[in-house]
Image (cartoon, rainbow, N blue to C red):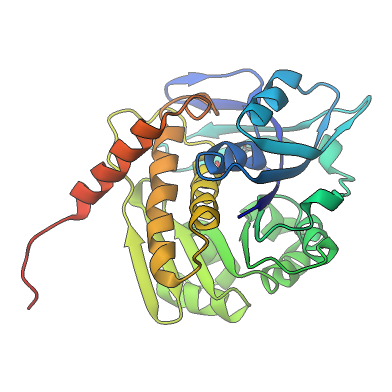
Length: 307
Ligand code: AMP
């Protein structure tokens, strides 16, 4: 099934306890598209970059069968730039710089050939832009998944609530779920957020895994314990790309299949953190992904008879 991906395509500069990068390729939609391309060859990108953005990465996306017809390149303008520094525990980070540049006036134009999309992934972007994308689709997709972050809660809460009310699945991290709901308990937070609109809520907890809420049902997927965690940037987006990519591939949006999708999303994210930026995702092999899915199986399998 075809998948429309919207989000930032950007430059990042990252500092972790293990090293520091100058400007490297980043952006929510870059990670989402790379992850999703492992599951569907029908991913279509809507994003904007400046003239400074390397054509080599766009070529790479195309070589992964990501359609870039909807990627706007703005002459004489600069790409979105984000810089972050991780704390020693790598679970938390400070945003040092957010330069919106081309994102400031981003008008998400949907090419006619994208109108058939059945799955929509709204990666991190201004909520108003995410909303515009939904409104510009002539047919509502079968599933709309949305990611967001605290930045938008601080400067665009009204728009954010409106967009949240229009989607099926919201993915946010635990800190953001607490900020959005005003509840410390994630169970109470999940109930409040579902009441805002999304029937499904995924709360990402970094190295502590992810929770999927749907009504009174909850599913938990651990994160794989890894020997090397180098750079968590993009892990959430990679997770989202794996999650929706798997759903688009299997074309089954039941709660049970979403559990499988969460395991695939977690497996994809486990690769992302092993190297800086998108480096580990660009040449990922199918065998490596399958091996990791098996590691997840072994991690949670036990033989206790039911009591
Ligand atoms: P994650 O680590 O999954 O939260 O995602 C990190 C990515 O999000 C980086 O590659 C950034 O370029 C991108 N990003 C950070 N802030 C924003 C923002 N305000 N809007 C859009 N993308 C952002």
